[in-house]
Image (cartoon, rainbow, N blue to C red):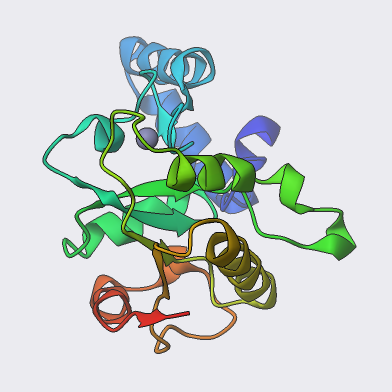
Amino acid sequence: MTELAKLPGVGHRTAQRLAFHILRAPPEEAAGLAEAIVEVKQKITLCEQCFNLTDEPRCRICADTRRDHSLICVVEEPSDVIPMERTHEYHGVYHVLGGALSPIDGVDPEDLKIAELLDRVTSAGGGDAPVREVVLATNPTTTGEATALYIAEELRSRAPQVSVTRLASGLPVGSDLEYADEVTLGKALAGRREL
Ligand SMILES: [Zn+2]
């Protein structure tokens, strides 16, 4: 139960409820759950192109040829891809940074997948269509804004032909993309502006 309580968003009460549920469940269901947890650890890795979570070398979004590979949406965490997908208004691909710049906490550009993003945008003939737009969808927080500005600057000097946009305001300031509802996020995406 102590282990269950370590899961994000699970307090002691919830851990207790989960423990009771598992106790009452048939043994094969409990075994299935345990197996699923082990499988996550063994099989889930980061996509070689966008660094989203995947159990293949390339995630299903990167592998999807119907998606617009000339449009890249930059997010902080894999969990930010989910609300963007829920809007059903985004048909490009993603780039997951793995966090946001925060010099105070020791998070510098080299700790994030920023070099990989710049490579992706500037490398021509990697089999994918040339990138036409990068949407910076980092969180509307101090660190998220700083990250967006840093990347925008880097892109402007290295790939001036690429349009760099930021989600429109309207998202609650200081909050995480993860908690934005799909209507608000859809509007922020539709109203994105050039940086
Ligand atoms: Zn991917």
